Amino acid sequence: MPRFAMLAAALLAVMTGGPASAGDAADRAAILSGYAEQAAADDPGFSGFTAARGEDLFRTRWAGGDARTPACTACHTEDPRAQGRNAKTGRPIEPAAVSVEPDRFTDIDEVEKQFRRDCDSVLGRACTAREKGDYITFMQEQ
Amino acid sequence: MRAVLLALPLAVALGSGPLLADDDEWMPPVTHTLTREECGDCHMAFQPGFLPARSWNRMMGTLSDHFGDDASIGIEKANAIRAYLTANAGDVDRRGAARGYMRWITPDGVPQRITENPAFVREHDFRPSVWQRHDVVTKSNCLSCHKGADRGYYEDD
Image: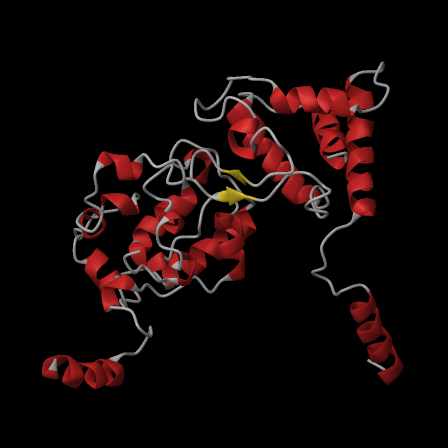
């Protein structure tokens, strides 16, 4: 690699915080627009995500999956800005609120993995794209 | 007292792993980042020395029913974690507490629950009220009492 290219690459890595840098608001926006496309495909009447529906999803006692996790709040507590605790393993969980944890919902693989596990555990089924977008929209305002 | 004074430098001279911990209160820590991260999504990544390689092999092949939960991950990640856990399993690297845990495992045994090993049970003979403390949640939550557990330290706290 020519010296200039190496220097430029090194400079770029420093400026962007390197390849392992945490995600940001733009990554989260991209994830939301992906879910919006899916939601529109699922339901032609879809007209955008709402934080209010996301909060309902968060607080509803679904009791559809594991008895230890009837609601999202079983692990995340009633306050999205508070530290939670995994109701099965006891592991502390960092707050889901974006204001406290700015890199929440910025890695699509992590987001999909967590929704797959948690929706199954709480609702006893997969979440729809609309539900995922509503949830992120709610947490974004917390 | 004299015996202690004589024994201390001896212990330091013989010790190969941990500082200031009895051999059975230390387990070689998890040094593989992917293992720490993926297992750590839901619980502390348990040190591979607690189970023999065949146990980790079975566990990593049955993640879709991981103690009742679907803990599936991509096959490439699962294989990398399996390789780390089996290469450092208790029957491969017998340092620290691994030796004591392996002593109880029968030649054809493929245990999955670390908390059922007699080496665990005899050190955790507590009143029910201890297990019912709200921050404990489950017997596998090492960190609620052993603050250095994720670094391999299991002193009595």
